[in-house]
Amino acid sequence: HGGAGWFASMTEEEIQGIKEALNIAADSGYEVMLDGGTSLDAVERAIIILEDNPLFNAGRGSVYTSELRQEMDASIMSGEDRSIGAVASVSNIKNPIKLARKVADQTEHVLLVGEGARSFARSVNQEIVPDEYFFSEEILKRVRKIKQSAAVEKISMNKIGTVGAVAIDINGNLAAATSTGGMTNKMPGRVGDSPIPGSGSWAQNNVCAVSSTGHGEYFIKYQVAREVCNRIQFLNADIETASKEIIDELDEIGGAGGVIAIDFNGKIAMPFNTPGMIRGDKTNKTDLEIKIY
Image (cartoon, rainbow, N blue to C red; front, side, top):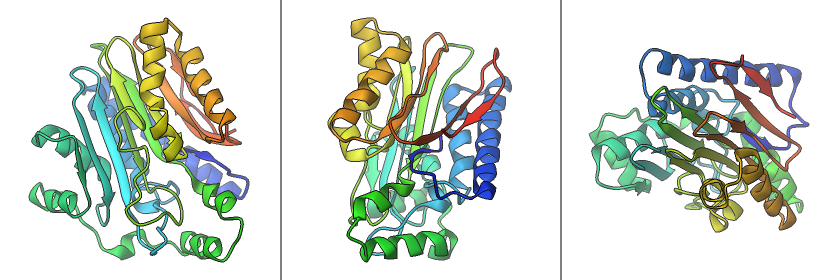
Protein backbone atom coordinates (compact mmCIF):
# COMPACT_ATOMS: atom_id res chain seq x y z
CA HIS A 1 0.00 0.00 0.00
CA GLY A 2 0.94 3.60 -0.50
CA GLY A 3 -1.13 5.10 2.29
CA ALA A 4 -4.72 5.94 3.18
CA GLY A 5 -6.02 9.48 3.16
CA TRP A 6 -7.51 12.33 1.20
CA PHE A 7 -6.21 12.38 -2.37
CA ALA A 8 -8.62 14.77 -4.12
CA SER A 9 -5.85 17.31 -4.74
CA MET A 10 -3.63 14.88 -6.66
CA THR A 11 -2.98 15.66 -10.31
CA GLU A 12 -3.45 13.07 -13.02
CA GLU A 13 0.32 12.97 -13.41
CA GLU A 14 0.75 12.18 -9.71
CA ILE A 15 -1.90 9.47 -9.86
CA GLN A 16 -0.17 7.78 -12.77
CA GLY A 17 3.19 8.09 -11.04
CA ILE A 18 1.80 6.50 -7.88
CA LYS A 19 0.25 3.63 -9.78
CA GLU A 20 3.44 3.02 -11.73
CA ALA A 21 5.57 3.01 -8.56
CA LEU A 22 3.24 0.62 -6.75
CA ASN A 23 3.26 -1.60 -9.80
CA ILE A 24 7.05 -1.71 -9.80
CA ALA A 25 7.17 -2.35 -6.04
CA ALA A 26 4.71 -5.25 -6.19
CA ASP A 27 6.38 -6.79 -9.21
CA SER A 28 9.82 -6.46 -7.64
CA GLY A 29 8.75 -8.06 -4.38
CA TYR A 30 7.07 -10.88 -6.25
CA GLU A 31 10.18 -11.45 -8.38
CA VAL A 32 12.28 -11.72 -5.24
CA MET A 33 10.24 -14.73 -4.15
CA LEU A 34 10.23 -16.26 -7.64
CA ASP A 35 14.03 -16.08 -7.49
CA GLY A 36 14.08 -18.01 -4.24
CA GLY A 37 13.98 -15.13 -1.77
CA THR A 38 11.85 -15.13 1.35
CA SER A 39 8.70 -13.17 2.05
CA LEU A 40 10.83 -11.00 4.37
CA ASP A 41 13.18 -10.19 1.49
CA ALA A 42 10.17 -9.43 -0.70
CA VAL A 43 8.49 -6.91 1.59
CA GLU A 44 11.80 -5.15 2.25
CA ARG A 45 12.45 -4.84 -1.48
CA ALA A 46 8.97 -3.44 -2.15
CA ILE A 47 9.29 -0.85 0.61
CA ILE A 48 12.72 0.31 -0.60
CA ILE A 49 11.23 1.16 -3.99
CA LEU A 50 8.45 3.21 -2.38
CA GLU A 51 10.84 4.94 0.04
CA ASP A 52 12.93 6.07 -2.92
CA ASN A 53 9.93 7.65 -4.65
CA PRO A 54 9.07 11.22 -3.50
CA LEU A 55 5.37 10.69 -4.25
CA PHE A 56 4.97 8.66 -1.05
CA ASN A 57 5.12 9.73 2.57
CA ALA A 58 8.11 7.59 3.45
CA GLY A 59 11.82 7.91 2.87
CA ARG A 60 12.48 10.63 0.32
CA GLY A 61 8.88 11.89 0.26
CA SER A 62 8.50 12.14 4.05
CA VAL A 63 6.54 15.09 5.39
CA TYR A 64 7.95 17.79 7.68
CA THR A 65 7.67 18.03 11.44
CA SER A 66 6.71 21.31 13.10
CA GLU A 67 10.43 22.13 13.14
CA LEU A 68 10.63 21.55 9.36
CA ARG A 69 12.62 18.33 9.44
CA GLN A 70 11.86 14.72 8.56
CA GLU A 71 11.61 12.12 11.30
CA MET A 72 10.90 8.69 9.89
CA ASP A 73 9.68 5.40 11.34
CA ALA A 74 9.79 1.85 9.95
CA SER A 75 9.40 -1.78 10.98
CA ILE A 76 9.72 -5.23 9.47
CA MET A 77 8.56 -8.56 10.90
CA SER A 78 8.93 -12.24 10.07
CA GLY A 79 6.02 -14.54 10.82
CA GLU A 80 8.31 -17.56 10.91
CA ASP A 81 10.09 -16.71 14.16
CA ARG A 82 8.48 -13.35 15.03
CA SER A 83 11.79 -11.57 14.60
CA ILE A 84 11.18 -7.82 14.43
CA GLY A 85 13.34 -4.84 13.59
CA ALA A 86 12.20 -1.24 13.89
CA VAL A 87 13.51 2.32 13.93
CA ALA A 88 11.77 5.52 15.00
CA SER A 89 12.39 9.27 14.77
CA VAL A 90 15.33 8.79 12.41
CA SER A 91 16.58 11.61 10.19
CA ASN A 92 18.83 11.56 7.13
CA ILE A 93 18.51 7.79 6.69
CA LYS A 94 17.91 7.09 3.01
CA ASN A 95 16.02 3.83 3.57
CA PRO A 96 14.66 3.36 7.10
CA ILE A 97 13.31 -0.09 6.20
CA LYS A 98 16.85 -1.30 5.44
CA LEU A 99 17.94 -0.07 8.85
CA ALA A 100 14.97 -1.80 10.50
CA ARG A 101 16.00 -5.06 8.82
CA LYS A 102 19.54 -4.59 10.15
CA VAL A 103 18.16 -4.12 13.67
CA ALA A 104 16.37 -7.45 13.32
CA ASP A 105 19.31 -9.31 11.81
CA GLN A 106 22.32 -7.83 13.60
CA THR A 107 21.19 -6.81 17.09
CA GLU A 108 19.44 -8.36 20.06
CA HIS A 109 16.98 -5.46 20.10
CA VAL A 110 13.65 -4.71 18.45
CA LEU A 111 13.50 -0.92 18.26
CA LEU A 112 16.19 1.76 17.97
CA VAL A 113 15.37 5.48 17.98
CA GLY A 114 16.85 8.85 17.12
CA GLU A 115 20.58 9.35 17.36
CA GLY A 116 21.13 5.82 18.62
CA ALA A 117 19.56 4.45 15.46
CA ARG A 118 21.66 6.83 13.38
CA SER A 119 24.86 5.70 15.09
CA PHE A 120 23.90 2.10 14.41
CA ALA A 121 23.27 3.03 10.78
CA ARG A 122 26.83 4.29 10.50
CA SER A 123 28.20 1.12 12.06
CA VAL A 124 26.42 -1.11 9.50
CA ASN A 125 27.17 1.16 6.53
CA GLN A 126 23.59 2.23 5.87
CA GLU A 127 23.36 5.22 3.55
CA ILE A 128 22.99 8.58 5.30
CA VAL A 129 21.96 11.47 3.06
CA PRO A 130 21.86 15.27 3.53
CA ASP A 131 18.70 17.27 4.28
CA GLU A 132 18.56 18.34 0.63
CA TYR A 133 17.71 14.78 -0.40
CA PHE A 134 14.32 15.14 1.31
CA PHE A 135 13.55 18.70 0.19
CA SER A 136 10.14 19.27 -1.38
CA GLU A 137 8.74 22.74 -2.01
CA GLU A 138 5.21 21.33 -2.18
CA ILE A 139 5.44 19.51 1.15
CA LEU A 140 7.13 22.52 2.76
CA LYS A 141 4.28 24.78 1.59
CA ARG A 142 1.78 22.34 3.07
CA VAL A 143 3.28 22.40 6.55
CA ARG A 144 3.57 26.20 6.46
CA LYS A 145 -0.09 26.41 5.47
CA ILE A 146 -1.02 24.20 8.38
CA LYS A 147 0.87 26.43 10.78
CA GLN A 148 -1.24 29.37 9.58
CA SER A 149 -4.54 27.51 9.49
CA ALA A 150 -7.19 26.83 12.10
CA ALA A 151 -8.24 23.69 10.21
CA VAL A 152 -5.06 21.89 11.15
CA GLU A 153 -6.37 18.35 11.33
CA LYS A 154 -8.10 18.27 7.95
CA ILE A 155 -5.06 19.57 6.10
CA SER A 156 -2.50 17.54 8.01
CA MET A 157 -4.38 14.36 7.17
CA ASN A 158 -4.15 15.13 3.45
CA LYS A 159 -1.05 12.97 3.19
CA ILE A 160 -1.55 10.75 6.18
CA GLY A 161 -0.34 7.49 4.73
CA THR A 162 2.59 5.22 5.22
CA VAL A 163 3.82 2.65 2.75
CA GLY A 164 3.56 -1.01 3.55
CA ALA A 165 3.80 -4.53 2.20
CA VAL A 166 2.77 -8.03 3.24
CA ALA A 167 3.68 -11.33 1.63
CA ILE A 168 3.56 -15.10 1.88
CA ASP A 169 6.21 -17.24 0.18
CA ILE A 170 6.32 -20.78 -1.15
CA ASN A 171 7.23 -22.12 2.30
CA GLY A 172 4.18 -20.51 3.90
CA ASN A 173 6.23 -17.90 5.74
CA LEU A 174 4.44 -14.59 6.23
CA ALA A 175 6.08 -11.17 6.51
CA ALA A 176 5.04 -7.55 6.94
CA ALA A 177 6.82 -4.20 6.64
CA THR A 178 5.76 -0.58 7.09
CA SER A 179 7.55 2.76 6.64
CA THR A 180 6.40 6.34 7.11
CA GLY A 181 7.32 9.98 7.40
CA GLY A 182 4.50 10.40 9.92
CA MET A 183 2.01 13.24 10.04
CA THR A 184 2.58 16.70 8.65
CA ASN A 185 3.45 19.24 11.36
CA LYS A 186 3.85 16.56 14.03
CA MET A 187 5.72 17.37 17.21
CA PRO A 188 9.42 16.50 17.07
CA GLY A 189 9.88 13.08 18.63
CA ARG A 190 6.33 11.96 17.88
CA VAL A 191 6.25 8.27 16.99
CA GLY A 192 3.28 6.74 15.20
CA ASP A 193 2.14 3.17 14.75
CA SER A 194 4.50 2.17 11.92
CA PRO A 195 7.46 1.05 14.08
CA ILE A 196 5.33 -0.43 16.86
CA PRO A 197 4.91 -4.22 16.63
CA GLY A 198 1.24 -5.13 16.60
CA SER A 199 0.19 -1.62 15.59
CA GLY A 200 1.84 -0.83 12.27
CA SER A 201 3.09 -4.28 11.32
CA TRP A 202 2.39 -7.83 12.42
CA ALA A 203 3.25 -11.22 10.89
CA GLN A 204 2.41 -14.60 12.36
CA ASN A 205 2.80 -17.86 10.48
CA ASN A 206 -0.36 -19.95 10.13
CA VAL A 207 -2.44 -16.83 10.86
CA CYS A 208 -1.82 -13.60 8.91
CA ALA A 209 0.39 -10.63 8.09
CA VAL A 210 -0.80 -7.02 8.30
CA SER A 211 0.50 -3.53 7.48
CA SER A 212 -1.42 -0.50 8.72
CA THR A 213 -1.77 3.05 7.45
CA GLY A 214 -3.57 5.92 9.09
CA HIS A 215 -3.85 8.01 12.23
CA GLY A 216 -1.15 6.27 14.24
CA GLU A 217 -2.35 7.15 17.72
CA TYR A 218 -5.57 5.16 17.18
CA PHE A 219 -3.72 2.25 15.61
CA ILE A 220 -1.40 2.08 18.62
CA LYS A 221 -4.20 2.22 21.19
CA TYR A 222 -6.13 -0.56 19.47
CA GLN A 223 -3.11 -2.63 18.33
CA VAL A 224 -4.78 -2.86 14.95
CA ALA A 225 -2.35 -5.09 13.06
CA ARG A 226 -2.20 -7.70 15.84
CA GLU A 227 -5.95 -7.42 16.41
CA VAL A 228 -6.67 -8.58 12.86
CA CYS A 229 -4.64 -11.72 13.48
CA ASN A 230 -6.17 -12.25 16.92
CA ARG A 231 -9.64 -12.33 15.45
CA ILE A 232 -8.55 -14.93 12.93
CA GLN A 233 -6.70 -17.03 15.50
CA PHE A 234 -9.11 -16.87 18.42
CA LEU A 235 -12.51 -16.01 16.90
CA ASN A 236 -12.09 -18.08 13.73
CA ALA A 237 -12.90 -15.01 11.61
CA ASP A 238 -11.88 -14.90 7.97
CA ILE A 239 -9.36 -12.28 6.80
CA GLU A 240 -11.97 -9.98 5.26
CA THR A 241 -14.22 -9.96 8.33
CA ALA A 242 -11.37 -9.57 10.81
CA SER A 243 -9.76 -6.64 9.03
CA LYS A 244 -12.98 -4.84 8.07
CA GLU A 245 -14.45 -5.05 11.55
CA ILE A 246 -11.51 -3.37 13.24
CA ILE A 247 -11.38 -0.60 10.62
CA ASP A 248 -15.13 -0.03 11.07
CA GLU A 249 -14.64 0.17 14.84
CA LEU A 250 -11.92 2.77 14.38
CA ASP A 251 -14.24 4.78 12.17
CA GLU A 252 -16.79 4.93 14.97
CA ILE A 253 -14.30 6.65 17.28
CA GLY A 254 -12.75 8.95 14.67
CA GLY A 255 -9.74 6.83 13.73
CA ALA A 256 -8.91 7.18 10.03
CA GLY A 257 -6.95 4.70 7.94
CA GLY A 258 -6.82 1.18 6.60
CA VAL A 259 -4.86 -2.07 6.46
CA ILE A 260 -3.59 -4.55 3.95
CA ALA A 261 -3.69 -8.13 5.18
CA ILE A 262 -2.92 -11.61 3.88
CA ASP A 263 -3.73 -14.88 5.62
CA PHE A 264 -1.95 -18.24 5.67
CA ASN A 265 -3.95 -19.39 2.64
CA GLY A 266 -2.99 -16.33 0.59
CA LYS A 267 -6.38 -14.65 0.89
CA ILE A 268 -6.17 -10.85 0.85
CA ALA A 269 -8.17 -8.01 2.42
CA MET A 270 -7.60 -4.25 2.10
CA PRO A 271 -10.32 -2.30 3.96
CA PHE A 272 -10.14 1.44 4.69
CA ASN A 273 -12.43 4.16 6.05
CA THR A 274 -10.82 7.16 4.34
CA PRO A 275 -11.87 8.43 0.89
CA GLY A 276 -9.01 6.47 -0.65
CA MET A 277 -6.16 4.06 -0.02
CA ILE A 278 -3.41 3.38 -2.55
CA ARG A 279 -3.24 -0.40 -2.77
CA GLY A 280 -2.52 -3.37 -4.99
CA ASP A 281 -1.85 -7.09 -4.87
CA LYS A 282 -0.26 -9.79 -6.98
CA THR A 283 -0.45 -13.56 -6.58
CA ASN A 284 0.34 -16.64 -8.64
CA LYS A 285 -3.34 -16.71 -9.56
CA THR A 286 -4.14 -13.04 -10.18
CA ASP A 287 -2.54 -10.22 -12.14
CA LEU A 288 -1.52 -7.01 -10.45
CA GLU A 289 -4.28 -4.44 -9.99
CA ILE A 290 -3.69 -1.00 -8.49
CA LYS A 291 -6.55 0.96 -6.91
CA ILE A 292 -6.84 4.28 -5.07
CA TYR A 293 -10.57 4.68 -4.43
